[in-house]
Image: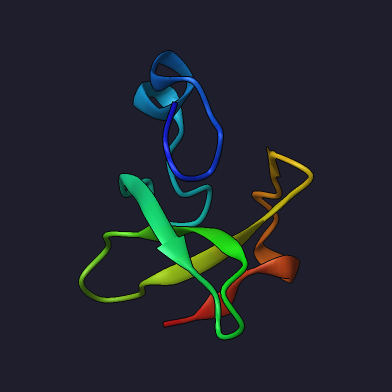
Length: 63
């Protein structure tokens, strides 16, 4: 499992819903787990709450 607690097979299929970019493990401003988009033009961070990625544009923050 990754730092977000997601199984590797789930990580392989998850993509940024806005740009389609690959998502990688990240850390939020206060250390909470996030998924970070690798899009070079519009990188976004998505929260992971209780081990569940919240892939909603409204909940994303810009990196």
